[in-house]
Image 1 (cartoon, rainbow, N blue to C red):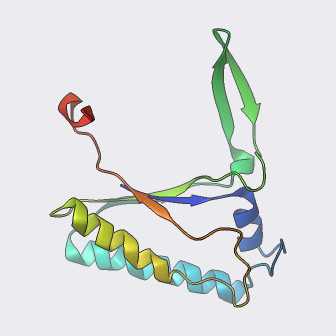
Image 2: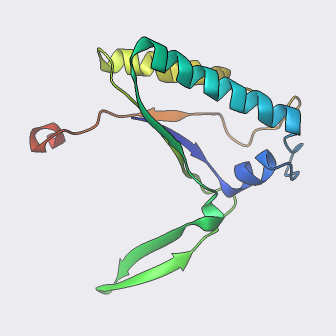
Image 3: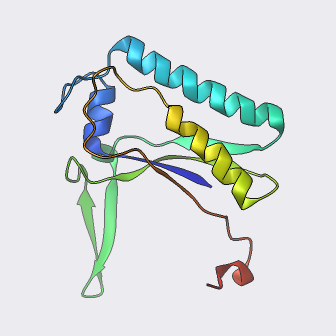
Length: 137
């Protein structure tokens, strides 16, 4: 699984709202969507694509945590800079190294010209556990 992260601020800027830098223009957003469509299509054509989903902004999330044995529900948004899972892509490929190569191609994801990043880009790659034996550390 290739996990992509983002913050509420990222979603707002992608929606064109300025943050610490320029918001995403319609052209910037289209370039991002076209890049992701092409990246996914390459995986479909190679036979490595299994599934991919983007998630809504953290403002639409709820967190349920246990406090003193009682579930407590907190509505989003969380801190603007707190990163959450923004989407994922499942691939089935020959090796963990190949999944890492696929994920590394996301480093070329377009961003607005002149964008000031508060952090470097990253994704996580993790094998999906198919049974209890895969959970051993």
